[in-house]
Length: 475
Figure 1 (cartoon, rainbow, N blue to C red):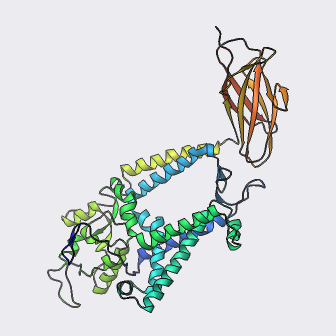
Figure 2: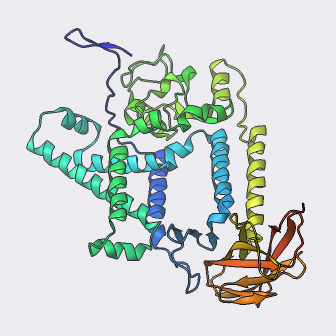
Figure 3: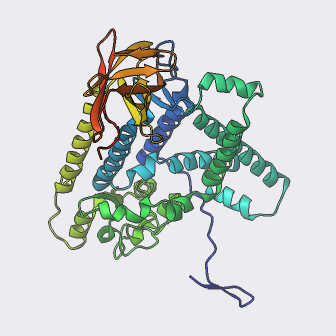
C-alpha cells in the first residue's frame, strides 16, 4: 500500500502502526488468564520436578541430556536410536492441532501459543506500569519527560527480567535444574550456557515486547495454511451482520428505527491484540482469542440489547441467518473429524505398542571395511567387527555373545583370548563398545550369512544381529 508524505514523496509501504490493546473483562479474557497461568506454571516449574530412576540415571522428571544422548520424560527414556518415538510425538501433535483447528478454529493461537502467552504477559506488565490503552498511547506519542522515561525504563526492566527467567527456564530442560540455578547464583556458569541464555533473553524480549502481532501475521506459517483445515461448520468468531447493520451511533433513550444493534463504538477493534476489525469478516490475522466478544457483550449490556452480536459461530449458520434461512444445528463431528481421530488413534496405537514392547537391550555391529578379512598363519580366515551394546536399564549387566551360522567359529577380543562364547560387561544406562574378531577354518567361497546372538546372563533378555563373514572368493 503506497502513501504520500507531506513533502510529496511517495512511500511504497505503509508504516506498521503500533497496537495498544485495551483492557477488557469477560468470559474469554478469564479463560486467557487461566490458560496463561497454567502454561507459565508448567513451563517454569516442570524442570524442578523429580523422578527416581535409580542411582545411575538423572532424577529430573523432564530432561534432554545432550551430553549422554538421552531424553527423559517421567517414566519414558528415549535414546538416539529411538528417534521414531520423537517422530511419532511430532506427528501426533500436528494431527491433534489440525483436529482442534477443524473443530474450533485457531484456539491454539488465541490461548496456548507461546507467542500469545508471553505477549499477553508483556502487555499486562505494560498496562500495570503505564496505564490502559489511551494512557499508553499518549505516553508513547508524547514528548520525553521524566515520567515517560521512568515508566518506560520500569516496563523494559520488568520485560528483561521475564525474558531472562524465560531463557533460563528453557536451559533448565537441558541441565539439572537445581544444580544450574546454584551455578547462576554462584556466578559459575559455562560460557555456552550463558550464551544461550543471553540470546534467548534477547529473542523473548524482542518477540513479546516489540514484534508481537507481526510474528503471527508475517512469521508464523500456521496463519497461512489454517484455512485448509476450515470448513463451513468450523467454529469461528463472526459478526452478525444481519443483526448489526446498518451500524451507527445511538444515544441512550433514542429510537432504534433504521439502525442495527452495532453502535459503531469500535470497542471490538480497541481490545483486539491483532488490531483487526472483526466486522469486516474473518481475516487471516484473527487468532480467535474472543476478546472482541467480551468487549461487544459488555457494550450490549450497557445499551440494553441481547449479547451475541459478535460470537463464536459457524460460517454456515451466519450465512443462513443473513439470508433468512432455517438455522442449522452445530456439527462438531464431521467426516474430516473422524479422519483426524482415526489417524490419531493409529499413530497413538503404534507408539503405545512400541513403548510397551521397547527392548531393554540393543546390539549394533559394523563389519570392518579395510581389510575385509585376514588369513591367519594356521589357514583360518578372520573378520573384524565393531560391536556396540546398548544397556537401556539402570543396572549393570553381563552379556554372553555367540556366533551362529559359521562352523568352528571362534570369537576373540584383545586381552580376552579365543572363546566359543564371549562374556561382556556393560554399565547401567550406557553403551558398551568393543572390538571383536571372528575366525574360522573357511574355504574360499561367497560371503557367509552369520548371526550374532547376545544374551543377558541373569535375566535371559537377548538380541540378534545379522551380518556377513567374508573370505576369499573362489577362482
